[in-house]
Length: 256
Image (cartoon, rainbow, N blue to C red; front, side):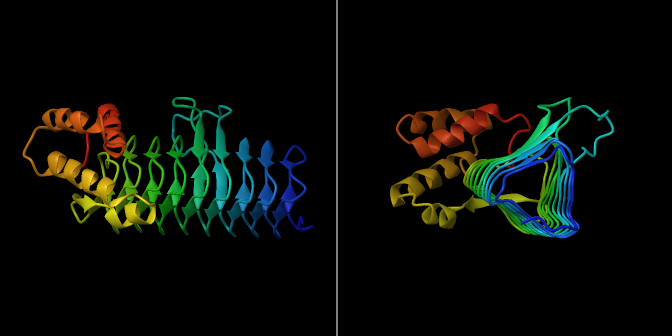
């Protein structure tokens, strides 16, 4: 399952079910789980832990050093879960000692060609990043978020669960859960109701989130005032509770 033209460091630990293509390079301190396929000319550098049944296509680069001048060669990591797909020319960098020391990618994510995921980013599960989407360092993307092509995300920003960005969007603040953002400059455009329907949210849950969106974006309330109203709703509406928790920990404020 390993092409004889691949270059594998002796310290790499590969499950017997791993496939490595021609001229791929697997560096030291790399662990790869069963069923993962690394395409030709792809590079995986360590320290890195990669789970099961991932697909890393040709010319992707996973686990490179952080593109951060403060990085001084510290032993930082990248951790990747299961069943992720990394298409051609995707780049994912390791963490830095100045943050958590690792870049973390969950499971079942779909990372399209030319995407860049910088140091210390955290991706949840079932995230889609379309072609050329770019994350600066320290970005968090929660479960089921979708980033349109050429989306660019500033350092330390967060995109909430089920959030959605249109094509060629520049984000310098957080995008709350469920919210769709598009345009130049980027503006909130409503909630991702189509995505919620696909993920089996009930009609009532979607109505609750729409009501919460109107409070947050259409009521002319200050953010603190809107948050107080949302806390009342969240007591009986778990889908709104997710939104409240996000707003309570937002450090860069939100797209509003």
